[in-house]
Amino acid sequence: MTFDLFDDLLPETPHTEPLAAGAVILRAFAHAAAPALLEAVARITASAPWRHLVTPGGQRMSVAMTNCGSFGWVSDARGYRYEPADPLSGQPWPAMPEPFRTLAAEAAQAAGFAGFAPDACLVNRYLPGTRLSLHQDRDERDLRAPIVSVSLGLPATFLFGGLQRTDRTARVRLAHGDVVVWGGPSRLAYHGVAPLADGDHPLCGHERINLTFRRAR
Ligand code: SIN
Ligand code: FE2
Image (cartoon, rainbow, N blue to C red):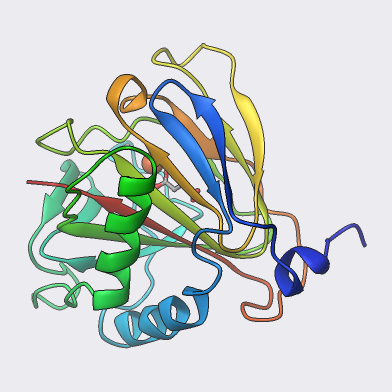
């Protein structure tokens, strides 16, 4: 097995890697907070369970999703949008936990985006084979705020391209605790995730969890 145990037991020394103009990888930034973040994910999914959304074109997404915060991202036959309530329960999404808010603001600040106050967090679950095809995050009202994306559990290959779908994509490995921030000239960059390779993560088993923080409204 090529999975690198040491990545998770002995994280990289935190450091910043440039990805594109306005986009950086903050290696190991969330490593210390990860256990608390994962506990919070378990509480969120107890009231807003994982579900597979359907694209407007009728495709079931292989990523399982839920949300917390004032708004949650949803997709169905009517399109992509943010909703203040979980369509499964009719109840507001679970509140954004304090450790989520703090980590997202600190990561944005470290990437050069001061004052980030997310009102939405999309929580994604990948199992072996799960992928996310190239897309832009463009359903948010104010594109001045960056996207902050936290990787937990199994490592993934993240694809990060340009402003056109056909632009070449960089392939970067994201390990447990890594955070990617993209904004400014990269805010509408196409991105996705290659099919997840199997592995056994000490905290997450066969799963990868991703948190993406957004300013929706
Ligand atoms: C996303 O684009 O919403 C998720 C990206 C990731 O899982 O790393
Ligand atoms: Fe995205």
